[in-house]
Image (tube, rainbow, N blue to C red; front, top):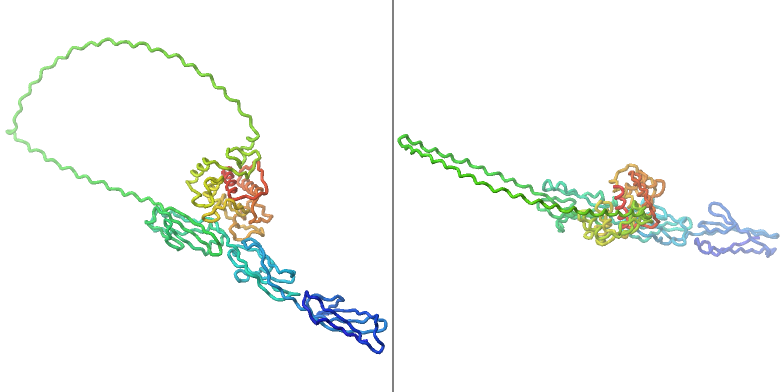
Amino acid sequence: MDINIELSSNNFTYGDEPITIVTNQIPLNNGIDEDATFEYLYTNQNGETSATMPTDVGKYTVTATLKSNTHIGESTTSFEIMPKNITQPDVVGTPQVYNTLTAVIEDIDSQYLTYQWYRNGMKLTNETAGSYKLDVLDSGANITVSATGNKNYQGTLISNFVEVSKLLISGQLLVDINEIEKSSNVMLTPDVSNVFPVEAQIGGSFEWYVEDVLVTTASSYIITDVDVNKSIKVVYTPDEMFAGTVDNISIVEREEPEIEIEPEIETEPEIETEPEIETESEIETEPEIEPEPEIEPEPEIELEPEIEPEPEIEPEPEVEPEPEVEPEPELETEEDKYTNNLFLSSTTNKVSPTGNIFATTVSSTEEIEESIEDESQIDLTTIFVDIAASAWYYADVLNVYTKGLLTGVSSTEFAPNDNVTRSMVASIIHRIEDEPIVYTKSTTTDIVANSWYDMPVSWAMTVGIIDETAKFRPNDYITQDELATMLYNYANYIGVDMSYDIDTSDETITRAEISTVVSRFLEIIE
């Protein structure tokens, strides 16, 4: 008996409702088997068979076989499952340097997609995963990703761009003015090697100001005599991919040499001519002078006998005061046991019995004034708009700033309430040690090569301050526990006993608090 297969469609798209198969018997002289059943066998273009309706994209044939005790029959037909078009991908994540962006297309499994990431329209080599970690070179750039469907999907679409926030530069701009004191017409050239990140050291521009008046935008400036005793300021603005500026202000001082006045040459005195000698006839003899009669001495006058002075009356002996009774020594209190604690917690200069390493200290006005005198009269309030002279942390910020251990986040802001990252602490300890150079770089996978923190972290791992076997997490905010460990390890490295009671926690540290901790730490190790 012949049979006929009818399909609702000869093709359909992946993910849509599958086709419907209807099988009919073509009656012969002996009629139709009402109890007959059909079996279906599906064969793909590779010759593979299955009794289940296929769902993946491809060309197939279906064979229907009549199962009956009285009739036999078989029929074959074909159909195709078409790939589905993809939709535009979205980019999710915070577009900031060191963060990770992810490409997402709803309702499509990532196994059916391949990706390619772009920076400012330029393909990024080997960046074909579904996510991309932003690095320093992405600062200020536009990032896009393209998605291409495969297997059951087709088409290529590109996402809308996301703009990465510009990375704020930090560090110091160095200018050597020592030669100015020796001669005129000295060329000043700024040194940007302490500007971070390192990538910001290339492609920037300069502005030179004399007494706050812009004089040139060249990369160097020649000092002349007219600049003596004037304020010279140079401002460095990085490439447009970065934000912020760094500057340097110097006073050109030169003492004018004193001109020695030659002594006047004294004229020789005129020589007087000798008087002419008179002839003998002209010289008259002087009459002889008769001697005066001798004067008889006066008789001596007898002196009256001296009157003996009355004997002095001896003063009465002073009564010796009774000796003062020395007070009994005070008993040592529990609080005194912690006088060697590194960190204070009140304005009385007493140490907290809890030994809290990170307690907030409110310095008195007298302490702040003394600290300013010790720091060459630098006034931070004229440098940073967010630092007040009455702030509890003023003296400590002044201390670390003048030592070059911690600068502002820009030329006008210190950001005392911002949290401190692990890489920033490694950099501070590296600067305390005068920035030694190591040639064995860290093998930790989360350290960006040639980044501003690469050398400090590599050095800290080399000398045992940081555990080299674990990931460093440079952009994580450091906790009190982690800071205490790093300072303790550094103290051991330089041979300083740090056996102090320390009560820490997993709370983060602000820039104001790290200034206080580092200032007190320096008092111990110096």
